[in-house]
Length: 183
Image (cartoon, rainbow, N blue to C red):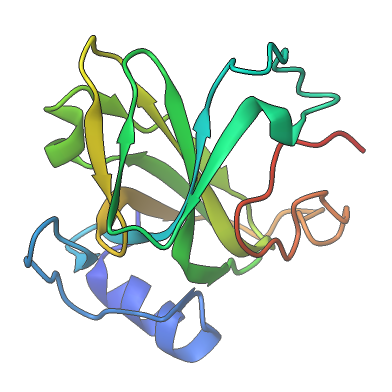
């Protein structure tokens, strides 16, 4: 079952599912905060922009910092054509054992050609969410720091037999931008 604003707010306040939590949609610039059936999260001011300057190969089993240029402390960043960037959510998430989240793009960015590949916040996971932004166009796209960046839809179900925390997932407790890693 998809969770509504009342249910999301209750989980954020009583179980610290989202911190910091904004209990309404704030519409300055690109909106963020609670919506009827989801939450618009923000990205911070550190970005990793994909590059092939050093000729690195993107290998998910041996991912290297050489694949990126890191930009910190800027109000925005330009994502080059046909490229992508990583950013960390400002919000820290503590997913209850019976709730999972699905990240999707904000329509404001999607209408400019910037995609946010679906990402799952698994039941029992906690940490800052690493967001991926893919520029599908032939133009650079500006992505703003400390502003609405993606939307999460939350779903509840019966308690799983094994949660993300039970299996000690490799991204448990991540803070900031965590690159792909294999166990």
